[in-house]
Image (cartoon, rainbow, N blue to C red; front, side, top):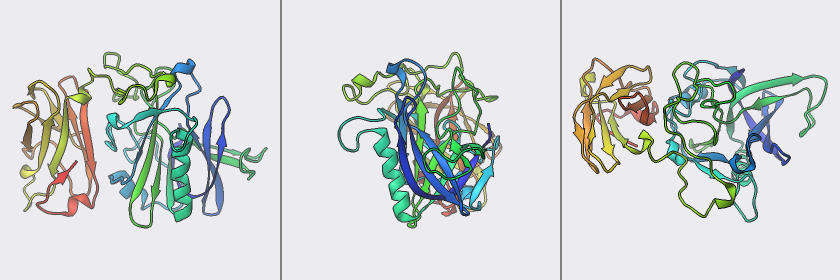
Length: 344
């Protein structure tokens, strides 16, 4: 993979509505034109399994965006670093936030083409910086771009999850995404995933874990008949608990007073023996105690394991098998308030 991020400005968009449909975005960075190819339907598998799952977040706050804002316009390679996007480890959103949507259907604002185009149109109208995380392709000096006519053809594709696939190559911290940073300071984010990609992957290559629960594919004809769809299977540990708060900047300088609050969302008592919390550098905080259904437990850090730096970070909750239960992130701005808790 030739992974990285293109920072520039959205100028136009087109629909590529063939057997492998994409929303095509024209971006300009330092005067150079680039095409961003955004999948709106899978090209593989039977028709019943081609839906793409997506989520658009209205206000993303994350350390990787803090870093991206420092970059100049144009392409920046970042393969293999945690400054890239990882749908599982970056904790940008919860898996259960995603939902499947047909790429096109009759009616207003109810298909993936329209959702993506609405985001792009807002970016164009606001002349807002856009960050396209994905794989770079081109240049193709022998032919102009087939949608926008500029030459040489080049751009960014794989604007979707790039791990957990049982057929193609996988990688950690190389997932695709599109961010739009508005003049108000608010940043929207687009994230997309194919149904055959798993939510639990290994720490070496991002390959799917064989013994982890995976969701069944969703038939397009039934979308809307059952809501909400389970894009995460009911037996997944994602349904057990949530991180609902954190104290990352306690008063004074004692890191032992850093704290995370865990809420039991299940119907059973959770024994936290063998559970742990990871920080952004995979330092571990072992857990103990029990949490009853509908109750919360404050985990006060010892100061010898995980750390919650004030400059932004991630907090990940793992069960005894090492499977992710929940994860959150916070930005540099979030960590500035001494003595104030962050809620998630």
